[in-house]
Length: 405
Ligand code: PMP
Image: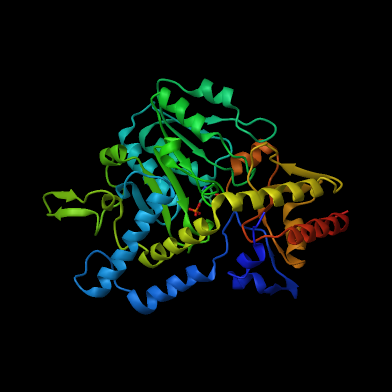
């Protein structure tokens, strides 16, 4: 495999730093990936040369900034295989994208309509639907999982009913790493007359995504998890659905004409983009997409799978190691506990040895409850992690395990 991980690593100045005098091994990629130099360069370039508010300006700078923002929209359209840039809405992130759909598409639902979620959803894909339940009296149903952390598809089929209006599901679980069979879920949901939102936060940088091939109705993700800047996200929505949906927020940019008596709204996608967007971040997202596709999502995925396989096998040799999520189709996310040791103690000791992992409930408290734990330690890999980092990680885990008795 001609995957030049050392070359890619040199794109990330942060990977050269130390913590507590030890080389940093960054394994918190599920929370946020690091940002390559070229993406930061776009941010700097934008501030130094092109900064002006978008869409409203007649002057050159504003036109340049607008052109950069709209170029990103087309780039994202092509990246995820959407039909039209009218279907690409910029948000602050996955969370805002899901809130948008729950609030706006939710307006089209009535009391007793059903929304199906899964037990492994992030709070971002639970709470917006609960807010809708409080407002509209919808019913939330939850798909359970099998012992290996894959979805119980028989249970899913059983939950579909003539009242199912929305199925909202993670493409990849941020805790278990499970890759959910979203194409099958979408096809079953469509047969039942429901629309499907796919939370792609953990998939977009690790799997090829084609919203048309999936036949997804909504697909969303965050830039900071795909080597892009913070503060930006994307909601893809099928144009025919977005057309029917009322605006999510009101303000500048999203209107056609405003009078105190009556206001009309802008065309798609601007109807859903009230206020000044993070046009600097959006411009830099373009660079992140170019970067990701330049290396190739498939080679990245193969590299990460190699690290996942190696690290999982070596971790299993550690006495009392408990790994949560062993589904055959999973991304490079390893959640674990060492015996009954508290996740926080394990994470803290690893931190002191230079390993950045995340501990806690990972914004998935219902999943923690289903697993019967309060929290877990999570290590997750990205395109720049190496086999020797994983070797060092396993060695550190042996040490931590013996320290924790
Ligand atoms: N869904 C999933 C599966 C996630 O992993 C995350 C981030 N941890 C989110 C939603 C929320 O993303 P953001 O905080 O960028 O809005």
